Image 1 (cartoon, rainbow, N blue to C red):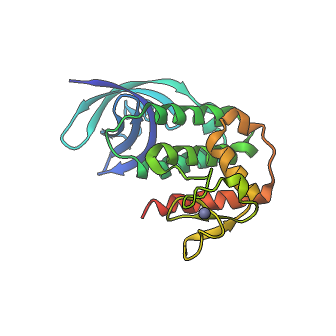
Image 2: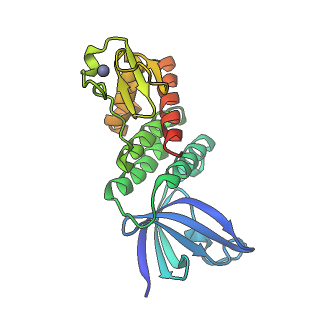
Length: 237
Ligand SMILES: [Zn+2]
């Protein structure tokens, strides 16, 4: 019995001598592993369907350890992504990073939509802005996967973020911000400021169209970027 799966390739790994295994995120089944027999041979008939940065409809059959690719169709190809080095790097990194955190066979419509929106957005965007969309997508995906950082109030005493002034700390273990008083004895807390918090807030809660045209302070963006990177790595442990 075959199934049609719509989605995108998160990763592709070499397998045995001539094969490849795709880590595919589908609307129907969530993350699945699909074996592509002979994918590493130049003349493989299946290769056109193994395009990264494309919306694919793959026809698969269940196998012992993997699904097996039988055929497929490229529904939409994001040419703007595959023709720009910076975009390729960011899309590859994002998908690889997020793939590790996603469990097999747990479809989530919101994740599917976000991954496609990410490709749609970076496809047409100025390459200089790719980084903003990348970090926004990473923090949004982390949230959808159950790691939403608490950035609206101190996770301990619940004091509103707006009342914290510049005494704001981000605690990686708790995954959120805390006030000066509650940060005591928390070794995984680092000092941030209201500008960095605003950037984190926008990346998490604003949509890609807004973020594309958004003007922000570079130095604070760099600090927010480091918080997100470290926050991500914390969840890999
Ligand atoms: Zn507090």
